[in-house]
Amino acid sequence: MSCSGDQVIFEMNARHRRFLQTLSLAALLAYTALFAYQTLSRGGVADEENVLAEKRHQRAPLEEASVTSESSSATATLRPPSTVLDDVFISVKTTKNYHRQRLPIILKTWFQLAKAQTWFFTDTDDPEFQHKTNGHMINTNCSSSHNRKALCCKMSVEFDTFIDTDKKWFCHFDDDNYVNVPRLVRFLGDYNPREDWYLGKPSIQAPLEIINKEKKPTQKVKFWFATGGAGFCLSRALALKMMPVASGGKFISTGEKIRLPDDVTMGYIIEHLLKKPLTVVDQFHSHLEPMKFIRREILEEQISFSYSRNKDEWNVVKIEGFDTKYDTNRFLSLHCFLFPHFNFCPR
Ligand code: UDP
Ligand code: MN
Image (cartoon, rainbow, N blue to C red; front, side, top):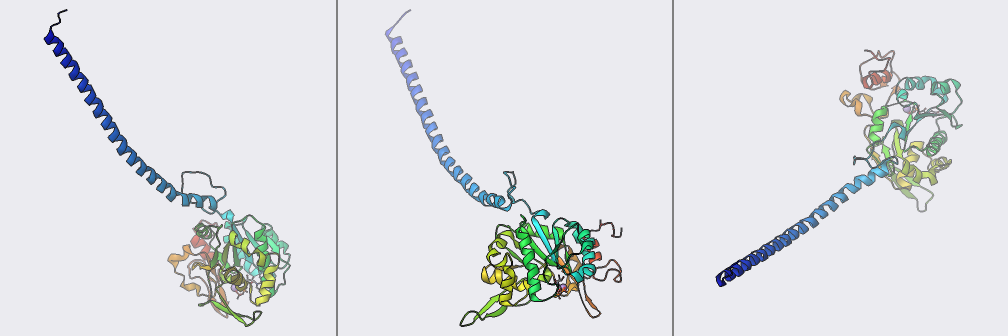
């Protein structure tokens, strides 16, 4: 192998050039890697922040989901699981003289949609209706008169009976109410039973003002109350907070103290004593308002209806359907309008 000086120089140059090339390539690679790392790491932090922000954003509904329903599990949905019929305790106040007059229409219509959840609170043992309600009549042993004490006594038993269940909502109605059961359940789904909710409709334009004579100097007390004749609902959380003044018969003594009816006593306890506001729900209706003004287009959205008679004038829902002779209070026609699949509805 010949080894001239030129060749050595050339070879050295070539080796030198390759070395330099490798070096600059390595430097380029190192620089690129550094640049890429910096860019990525900056972007990475930003991404992480976004993820955290997103997680924070998602946490509220997730936590809410877990408080809304004990049975909630980690599913893909972020919406709180909706309320079901079985979460609701429906109590209906009645009295022995109204069983035959008012209960049959309820039993034929809306009770059929909440047989297991609805209980009738009355003041006598009535084997016939005990049978017709599948054992859902509760004799409160309260007096069968319309006085304040008797009505508060019934409400007191309704309240205690609810507390003894594991239901999330307590909804009270009168025996002249029609309850749109699926609508009630859907409506309650918008509220969290672990929060304090008093849902109903006042029948007066301004809060009720009473004088507390026990306090000297006498004190004016102002509060709203949901009229019992339209129905109202309480969340379990609120009912539990009411227990010191409402459970075990204390509802009666509180009512006696202010000398006002059961629904007013309810408002006094919740709004005045507990300082929790009434949430006004327009979809509850008592016969203190004219039923005929509830437009046909909005009937389905309403939660409760009622009826009353003043001499020959009937205050009833305006709805076509069965003959007024046969369906005087219009509950049959209303029921068939809302649930036409019922077997007694015209096809
Ligand atoms: N009620 C009762 N005892 C009575 C009279 C009435 O428990 O002696 C109940 C009745 O069943 C209804 C509510 O109280 O659920 C209201 O009664 P009603 O509709 O006769 O009177 P209103 O107060 O609506 O005019
Ligand atoms: Mn009534």
